[in-house]
Image (cartoon, rainbow over all chains, first blue to last red; front, top):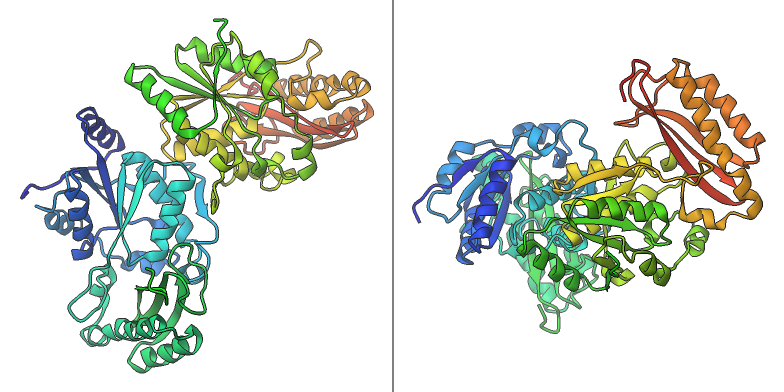
Length: 289
Length: 289
């Protein structure tokens, strides 16, 4: 398994590879990424490869899902390092389409998912989820994959992608994988590299507070006071601001006042000019997950 | 060719038929309809069958593309007659999904095409094109057809469908076919059955005026005065109102002041409580079509 993935840049070449795999009876899995790969991405690749499917990692920094030009400009672009990190992880192809391939002249189509795209990150990143849903739809149709692997770290994204795949009859199973964390609990993110050394020390406070909240929720507490209290402690711990800290239903992301069904605690917060997100599962008070 | 198409109602059954065709090396063509079939639809089926492809006619009265509940309620539903009309036309399957198959509980995804969906019918039928684009995307992914046949009568729809198929990498060629007309020039439409005998006599006035306008445009005339004059004559001829009569570029539907490139003259007008549309090609002044 120490082989490097082949780098494919053109859609016809990608399709030819997939057609050859299909002719041999292989399943195909896709792991969509924006590059700047870390252990979270690599764990997705390994889980995809473990199924026996041929694995395509996609690398496209999608301008349409950045609501901020500054964020787009600052987003790390490290194709060479990404390709190196993929050696031996089990991916056959690293698909790196250019902007013209993804958005040819006259491109005018949007895929939007109502409801799930509203609230949480949807409130703070207008247009983000429509841009994401559109490019993911294209990556699904371009790869015609049977399986897709996404991290649970972007939990709202995961639910939106599962919804659009079902709604548009794309015949792809979208699998969410547990968030990979540093030893101190910080969720891995390509944006972590932009944290100063000092901010990096403060960063685990978000996850630590969230764990405390989850324990209380699972013990039957009402969310409202718990959440506002936790927001105060996260800011006291060194974060500049908490965009949201909310309890939602795990399946359809409906707002919950307490964990009377399987739920998710989701947060976004600013630390040292970097926006970090995280989420944790909340077992329902009765015990259901 | 006197065989009846098989009626298929369930998506898994449809997919099984298509997979069997693919295994035998056949191409697949789809002709999406809302039923109430007329010779215009049948000519699409025959053109699809003439390619040698296996042909699926779809019949689904899509509630999401009706902006008026009254129009939806009044839309003819004639599945039995439709199936009979298809005998001997070359279709293998009449696919009739129910509402649950197309829009299962929790359905939340929209496919929208910017620009092309604005103006013309888009102005008068809010939401219509998004509903249409969404269901057509689903019919394309459900059938995984190689070819799709649409009438040019719904010209804006045709351009939107061609755009979304390209933008979403659906690997389907969308073919527009010449509008089929009655001997007196009236474009065939499922809505024509709702015209009174008196309105039916008046109906060809729209097409007749449009032909006069096309001749003048092709001779080099400016559109503005021509079009407002023609609107007056269409109303004087018995129509209650003209929603629009416009000259647009044939490819991207950009508004034109004269036919300096291949163009299309498009109209929508009300007659006896029925909304009729029509359009005609306009050769560019230099001669290009």
